[in-house]
Length: 137
Image (cartoon, rainbow, N blue to C red):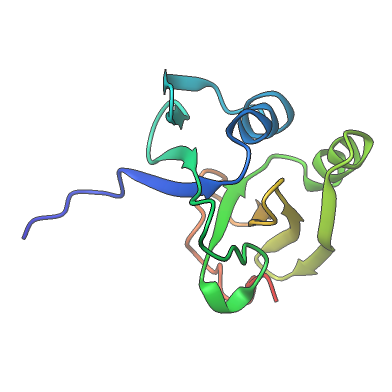
C-alpha cells in the first residue's frame, strides 16, 4: 500500500442543507463539488465531505470517545471565535493558550467537534508541530 495523503474527511450529517450552510457560509469553506447526497468542501489538501446520516443509527457527534474532530488553522483565533459567536455557533471550549499556540473548540450542527488552532511556531500553515495538548476534551 502506498498512501500519498489524506483525501477527505467524511461526516455523516443529520441535515445536509444545514451542514452545507454551516461549513460554507459560516466557516467559509468553498464548495468544490456537490451532488444530491454528497458535498465536497475545500480547495487544497484534504476535502471535507458531507453526506446524509442514517435515520436509524444512533448519532453521538460530541463524544470524545467516538474519535471525530476536525482541525482548522486560523490566523486570529480571538476574532474567529467572536465572529462565530455572533453567528450563533456553540463554543464547546473557549480559547486556551499554550506554548505552541491558541486553541478553541466549537460544535457544528451535528455536534461534531471542530478544533480551531492559531499556531505560535514559524510556519503558520503547519498544524502538526507541537500540536500535542489540544485535544477537544
